[in-house]
Length: 447
Image (cartoon, rainbow, N blue to C red; front, side, top):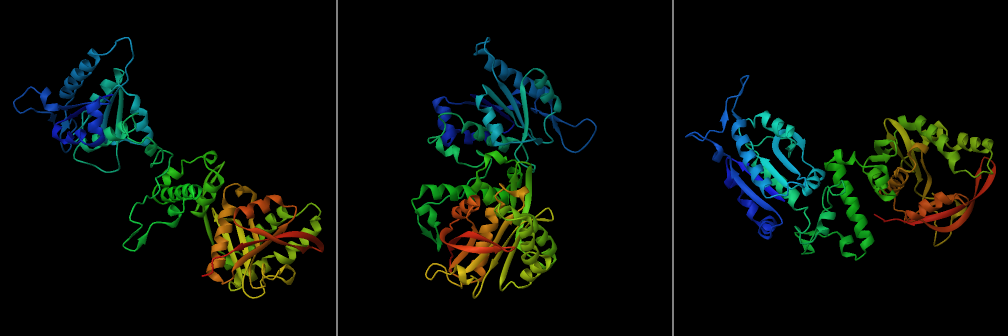
């Protein structure tokens, strides 16, 4: 790849001789040429600019000087090339009004034969320069490195040179380092650590010392997602549902962002308030039947909902946070999911107690439901983990207990994935019909 840099301050490009880029130039991987634009002027003052047509502040760089410079360098480069082989030639012009420079743009430029970068000064380069060479078939890239203005294009030129050349085969000593860095997968890179293990009372995260490569990979992926949500929501908005696994979607949901086949949504998982009672009851009535076995009649299900999940019952739960912990997921002003946990003495009914395994003072996860619209979005897992954290913060119970119908294999798989283990069975009355449930338990972190 040949790179031609044009500027009225050619000394600005001394850094191209440093570090990996300098080595790449020495080995011939890249061929860098730095040009002083004033070498193509013809007056005593070596003038490169003039006043703008139409008036206005500042000066504009003249197309005549740029035309001579670019024509000569293009001809020089073309002279040593096979004329029967098409060459890809790009004229890059740094400008605050250009398109944002991205990793994808940099990667696209790695197969260019000649990359010319025209560094403007003052009020920029006469627009006819870009228009003329574009009309001649030269690719013209007018690009920006951010929403701010610099005195000239030299800094942006160095940015482009490094962004492109470091992606060339043979440039990096360890090509794998390119695979995990920011923007390669549409996300920001995870935080990194090295020795010493402890520095100024700040410890390296334990997971990185565990030797468990699966856990480390997941931790890094989660931190990458978290950083991107917090710092670059525009990148998160470009993620596709099919590119995310279930753990990704669950973590994003916990960060307040749902990705579904239909698009992106903002979610807030919070403690239920008094005004949520009616909406919570409606949500509970919609979702409870989904977990019921086929043997239950509509009448039995309706009777249970009317008795246990009415607006009055939901209002009672919300009004007693010392006993009932209710979390809701709000999406677009509507409730899309909820959990109900019972804490305190005798939270576990006598029929479920198994001394040494399940005690009456353990916490009980009574409900964990999401609307059908949000299934597969990671919301259920995020809600469940939020409920676990809420119980741990609100209660000293060493375990969280739940029960689900023996025939509901999907729910059992979901809970086991989140650390619950089968400990017992119980019978459960739904509208006068006895059901058999599997009882699962997860150990809590006592605070």
